[in-house]
Amino acid sequence: MELRHLLTFRTVARTLNFTRAAAELHYAQSSVTEQIQALESELAAKLFDRTRRKLSLTPAGERLVEYADQMLLLAQQARTAVSEEAQEPGGLLTVGGLETLCAHRLPALLAPYRRAHPRVRVALRPGGRGELYEGVRRGEIDVVFTFGRVPDDELLAGESLTTEQLVVVVPPDHRLAGHQQVAAVDLRGETFLATPRGCGFREMLDDLIRSLGPDAPVIDAEVASMAALSQCAAAGMGCALLPTTAVAGAAARGEVIAIPLAGSAAQTSVTMTWLRKAEARPSVAAFLATARSAFEDLVPGGPGTHDVSDRAA
Image (cartoon, rainbow, N blue to C red; front, side):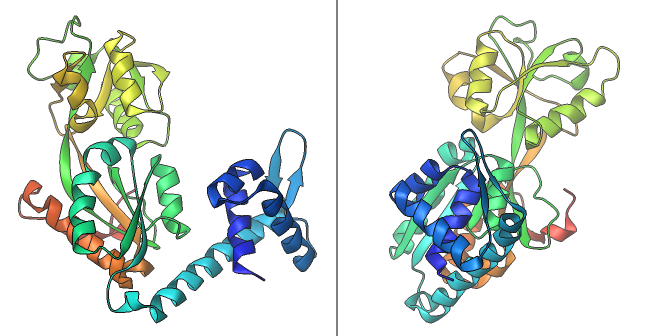
């Protein structure tokens, strides 16, 4: 069973699209098809159901995904163990993060890391929280940065690096625009825009709404991007609950007013998460150390490491 066939299979299984998988792997689509057919022939099992409109995994394909993940991760660990990286950080390091963090936080972290470890090739991958965590579990992403708490998963380790102030975002002519701070009760009766369910900020907003009881804010629309949320709020579509970083640019330009939220739910964590097994890789260990140092001045007393299993989801 060839590793390249397993990598191709895993990519098709994740994208459920031969064209997108071929583009991601830099293969011709015909090559992707041939590799999947070769794997199916070797295993004497059909891995995908193909129709004109939809591609889906068969039960055999679903079972193979887990084994493919394990075999590809083991192969990567084996290469690392016998390569020069065992003495000096090198190879590819894939860092993932929420769109806002990729744009505003991570460049300042990646630059000193690259200067200190020029043999490491760094890839930055933005994505949603669930997508990023799944990438870490699969061994496709080495370290991810998100807001909120990391999932309760024995495969993962994580720590909070700093905190971010949460702000209520409104257009300049909104009734709350002159407030220096808003409490939860000030939001009663308002219309809110929200990220989709499963996002950390949607969970925070849902908790805030539940705490208000009668006349609680109503979620009127879902918007996947934090940047788009800010622009929709500027257009008067509703209020939004966002971290300061996500709205700093729009607020500085006067497009929106960002009002700090008061109370116990007024802050969220910037969290770094990685695969526990990957800590032994020099490139990963060096990156974790660089991240801690970069964020150190932002956290009173410095960051503290916590296993994911000790934290609530």
